[in-house]
Length: 195
Image (cartoon, rainbow, N blue to C red; front, side):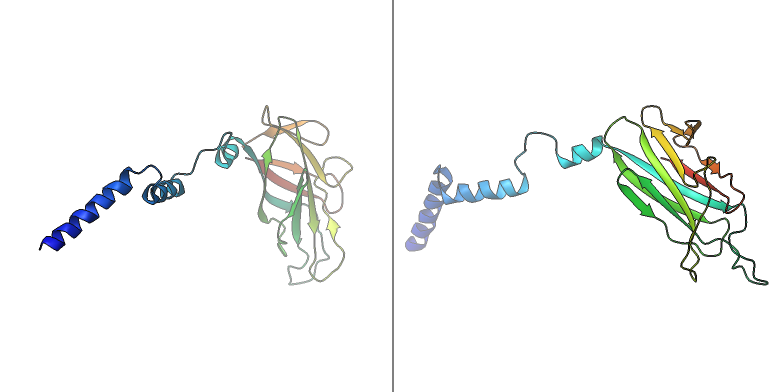
Protein backbone atom coordinates (compact mmCIF):
# COMPACT_ATOMS: atom_id res chain seq x y z
CA UNK A 1 0.00 0.00 0.00
CA UNK A 2 2.84 2.40 0.90
CA UNK A 3 4.68 1.66 -2.32
CA UNK A 4 1.52 2.35 -4.36
CA UNK A 5 0.93 5.67 -2.60
CA UNK A 6 4.56 6.69 -3.10
CA UNK A 7 4.32 5.83 -6.79
CA UNK A 8 1.17 7.97 -7.23
CA UNK A 9 2.73 10.90 -5.37
CA UNK A 10 5.89 10.59 -7.44
CA UNK A 11 3.83 10.68 -10.66
CA UNK A 12 1.88 13.76 -9.55
CA UNK A 13 5.08 15.57 -8.58
CA UNK A 14 6.67 14.80 -11.96
CA UNK A 15 3.55 16.00 -13.80
CA UNK A 16 3.51 19.29 -11.89
CA UNK A 17 7.19 19.81 -12.59
CA UNK A 18 6.64 19.30 -16.31
CA UNK A 19 3.68 21.68 -16.36
CA UNK A 20 5.64 24.50 -14.69
CA UNK A 21 8.91 24.04 -16.58
CA UNK A 22 9.21 26.79 -19.26
CA UNK A 23 10.90 24.62 -21.89
CA UNK A 24 9.20 21.36 -21.11
CA UNK A 25 8.15 18.89 -23.76
CA UNK A 26 4.57 19.15 -22.52
CA UNK A 27 4.39 22.89 -23.24
CA UNK A 28 6.02 22.46 -26.65
CA UNK A 29 3.43 19.82 -27.52
CA UNK A 30 0.54 22.04 -26.37
CA UNK A 31 2.00 25.02 -28.25
CA UNK A 32 2.41 22.97 -31.44
CA UNK A 33 -1.12 21.58 -31.17
CA UNK A 34 -2.61 25.04 -30.63
CA UNK A 35 -0.85 26.50 -33.69
CA UNK A 36 -2.31 23.72 -35.83
CA UNK A 37 -5.84 24.63 -34.76
CA UNK A 38 -5.49 28.44 -34.83
CA UNK A 39 -2.99 29.45 -37.52
CA UNK A 40 -0.87 32.50 -36.98
CA UNK A 41 -2.37 35.53 -38.74
CA UNK A 42 -0.40 36.95 -41.64
CA UNK A 43 -0.24 40.65 -42.42
CA UNK A 44 -2.18 41.85 -45.44
CA UNK A 45 -5.40 40.63 -47.04
CA UNK A 46 -6.27 36.96 -47.05
CA UNK A 47 -7.36 35.20 -50.30
CA UNK A 48 -10.96 35.21 -49.01
CA UNK A 49 -10.88 38.98 -48.53
CA UNK A 50 -9.39 39.51 -51.98
CA UNK A 51 -12.12 37.37 -53.55
CA UNK A 52 -14.81 39.16 -51.54
CA UNK A 53 -13.64 42.58 -52.73
CA UNK A 54 -13.41 41.59 -56.41
CA UNK A 55 -16.48 42.31 -58.53
CA UNK A 56 -17.42 39.59 -61.01
CA UNK A 57 -18.77 40.41 -64.45
CA UNK A 58 -21.15 37.68 -65.56
CA UNK A 59 -22.23 37.79 -69.21
CA UNK A 60 -24.99 35.38 -70.24
CA UNK A 61 -26.18 34.73 -73.80
CA UNK A 62 -29.78 33.75 -73.16
CA UNK A 63 -31.02 32.78 -76.61
CA UNK A 64 -30.64 33.20 -80.37
CA UNK A 65 -33.19 33.33 -83.14
CA UNK A 66 -32.80 32.59 -86.84
CA UNK A 67 -34.57 35.25 -88.92
CA UNK A 68 -33.76 33.70 -92.32
CA UNK A 69 -33.23 30.11 -93.50
CA UNK A 70 -29.78 28.78 -92.68
CA UNK A 71 -29.91 25.39 -94.43
CA UNK A 72 -31.76 24.09 -97.52
CA UNK A 73 -35.15 22.72 -96.60
CA UNK A 74 -35.58 18.96 -96.81
CA UNK A 75 -39.22 17.79 -96.98
CA UNK A 76 -40.55 16.28 -93.74
CA UNK A 77 -37.27 16.89 -91.94
CA UNK A 78 -36.14 19.73 -89.64
CA UNK A 79 -32.64 19.79 -91.14
CA UNK A 80 -33.20 23.27 -92.62
CA UNK A 81 -33.14 24.70 -89.12
CA UNK A 82 -30.04 26.30 -87.69
CA UNK A 83 -27.41 24.52 -85.60
CA UNK A 84 -26.33 27.43 -83.42
CA UNK A 85 -23.19 27.79 -81.35
CA UNK A 86 -22.16 31.08 -79.73
CA UNK A 87 -18.62 32.14 -78.84
CA UNK A 88 -18.15 34.89 -76.26
CA UNK A 89 -14.89 36.85 -76.02
CA UNK A 90 -14.20 39.10 -73.02
CA UNK A 91 -10.60 40.28 -72.86
CA UNK A 92 -8.38 37.19 -72.95
CA UNK A 93 -11.29 34.88 -72.11
CA UNK A 94 -12.87 33.07 -75.08
CA UNK A 95 -15.53 30.42 -74.48
CA UNK A 96 -17.98 28.62 -76.77
CA UNK A 97 -21.33 27.08 -76.01
CA UNK A 98 -22.47 23.65 -77.05
CA UNK A 99 -24.05 23.37 -80.51
CA UNK A 100 -27.83 23.07 -80.39
CA UNK A 101 -28.84 21.12 -83.49
CA UNK A 102 -31.90 21.84 -85.65
CA UNK A 103 -33.35 24.65 -83.59
CA UNK A 104 -34.12 28.14 -84.90
CA UNK A 105 -34.83 29.57 -81.43
CA UNK A 106 -32.45 27.85 -79.03
CA UNK A 107 -32.09 28.82 -75.38
CA UNK A 108 -28.30 28.83 -75.14
CA UNK A 109 -27.86 30.04 -71.53
CA UNK A 110 -24.13 30.37 -72.16
CA UNK A 111 -22.38 32.13 -69.27
CA UNK A 112 -18.90 33.65 -69.12
CA UNK A 113 -17.66 35.24 -65.88
CA UNK A 114 -14.52 37.31 -65.35
CA UNK A 115 -13.20 39.43 -62.45
CA UNK A 116 -13.36 43.19 -62.95
CA UNK A 117 -9.95 44.61 -62.10
CA UNK A 118 -10.62 48.25 -63.03
CA UNK A 119 -13.40 50.72 -63.83
CA UNK A 120 -12.44 50.92 -67.50
CA UNK A 121 -14.87 49.81 -70.18
CA UNK A 122 -14.87 46.11 -70.99
CA UNK A 123 -14.92 44.98 -74.64
CA UNK A 124 -17.20 42.02 -75.37
CA UNK A 125 -17.57 40.21 -78.72
CA UNK A 126 -20.17 37.66 -79.76
CA UNK A 127 -19.88 35.26 -82.69
CA UNK A 128 -22.94 33.18 -83.60
CA UNK A 129 -22.31 30.30 -86.00
CA UNK A 130 -24.44 27.74 -87.77
CA UNK A 131 -22.37 24.57 -87.37
CA UNK A 132 -23.93 21.75 -89.35
CA UNK A 133 -22.76 18.41 -87.93
CA UNK A 134 -22.50 16.80 -91.37
CA UNK A 135 -20.71 19.69 -93.13
CA UNK A 136 -17.20 21.03 -92.49
CA UNK A 137 -18.13 24.59 -93.44
CA UNK A 138 -19.79 26.85 -90.89
CA UNK A 139 -21.96 29.88 -91.60
CA UNK A 140 -21.54 33.04 -89.53
CA UNK A 141 -24.89 34.44 -88.49
CA UNK A 142 -25.32 38.19 -88.80
CA UNK A 143 -26.20 39.53 -85.33
CA UNK A 144 -24.80 43.04 -85.76
CA UNK A 145 -26.59 46.13 -87.10
CA UNK A 146 -23.31 47.14 -88.78
CA UNK A 147 -21.41 45.61 -91.71
CA UNK A 148 -19.63 43.25 -89.31
CA UNK A 149 -21.50 40.01 -88.67
CA UNK A 150 -20.02 39.67 -85.19
CA UNK A 151 -21.49 41.79 -82.42
CA UNK A 152 -19.06 44.06 -80.58
CA UNK A 153 -20.17 45.54 -77.27
CA UNK A 154 -18.76 47.62 -74.45
CA UNK A 155 -19.72 47.46 -70.79
CA UNK A 156 -19.09 50.41 -68.46
CA UNK A 157 -18.61 49.15 -64.86
CA UNK A 158 -19.05 52.66 -63.43
CA UNK A 159 -22.54 53.18 -64.84
CA UNK A 160 -23.71 49.64 -65.65
CA UNK A 161 -24.42 50.72 -69.24
CA UNK A 162 -23.96 48.45 -72.28
CA UNK A 163 -23.09 50.06 -75.60
CA UNK A 164 -23.49 48.67 -79.12
CA UNK A 165 -21.01 48.63 -82.03
CA UNK A 166 -21.85 52.20 -83.06
CA UNK A 167 -21.51 53.53 -79.51
CA UNK A 168 -25.26 53.64 -78.98
CA UNK A 169 -26.69 52.77 -75.57
CA UNK A 170 -28.38 49.36 -75.67
CA UNK A 171 -29.42 48.96 -72.05
CA UNK A 172 -28.31 48.50 -68.47
CA UNK A 173 -26.83 45.74 -66.37
CA UNK A 174 -29.55 43.36 -65.22
CA UNK A 175 -31.76 43.93 -68.28
CA UNK A 176 -32.19 41.40 -71.12
CA UNK A 177 -31.00 43.03 -74.35
CA UNK A 178 -31.78 41.82 -77.90
CA UNK A 179 -29.72 42.86 -80.93
CA UNK A 180 -30.60 41.99 -84.54
CA UNK A 181 -28.42 41.74 -87.63
CA UNK A 182 -29.20 43.56 -90.88
CA UNK A 183 -28.02 41.15 -93.60
CA UNK A 184 -30.34 39.54 -96.12
CA UNK A 185 -28.76 36.12 -95.66
CA UNK A 186 -28.12 34.24 -92.40
CA UNK A 187 -29.66 37.01 -90.34
CA UNK A 188 -30.34 36.35 -86.68
CA UNK A 189 -30.93 38.03 -83.36
CA UNK A 190 -29.27 37.39 -80.04
CA UNK A 191 -30.46 38.10 -76.50
CA UNK A 192 -28.06 38.52 -73.59
CA UNK A 193 -27.84 39.93 -70.09
CA UNK A 194 -25.02 41.33 -67.96
CA UNK A 195 -25.25 40.31 -64.30
